[in-house]
Length: 293
Image (tube, rainbow, N blue to C red; front, side):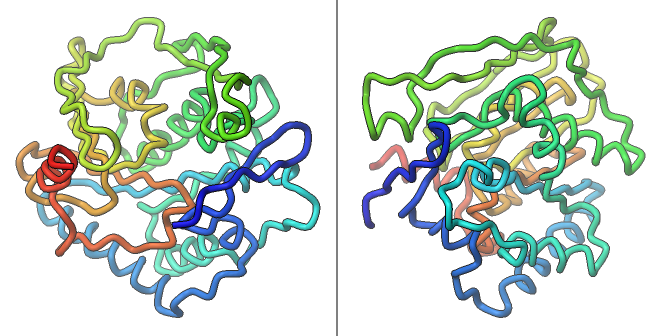
């Protein structure tokens, strides 16, 4: 694979380029997609929803917008974000079939990005916990629109602090320059991480328990690295929260934990692929593969 390079934007903003998902080609709609991609994406979600509904489990799917979309104004001149990009096509396909359990949460991040803090980091591919908290609140409110009445943290429950860290993009340019991050801590946290298999990325399994609210519903969350920034927020809304780092659903794991909800969360640039739940690897297989590497 070609080496990932850093795209220098305006006002010191850095972006990803030359990555395996071809993010710049994605957002400018220069990739030729399989014409059945949106169809396969929709069918996959309908099968998930139908299967889980049969087992009295509620399913929700969320896409996190790319940094390049939220901060498009800082992209170099000549890079124009297309409203015909794949994520918009997927969103349109799902809306045509009234699949309200699928949501691309973009507008709240666009509206919030300059109010208090930036929502993404200048020198990193990821967001910060201010952006993650805004996403969490909107995620929970969407779920609650369907009469679920789950607890949702408020801004008064969170203490935000600035911290200087090494960003994954800025580090490629200079190992000495630090990036500003925003950390959000729950003031009166009631959750505890009771299990962590210590596997990084794919194969990771973490379990949180809400010590004060054991009567809350349970959830299994299939996620990628972006959800790491809001794990502790999501866990406050459930009695038990299982985080599984993989795109495809693991039905054996779902059966094991018997949750009330299953949620999948994915960054926009990974939506280029449609995960296979039937033939995809189990979490235990991903974990074993990582440990044997």
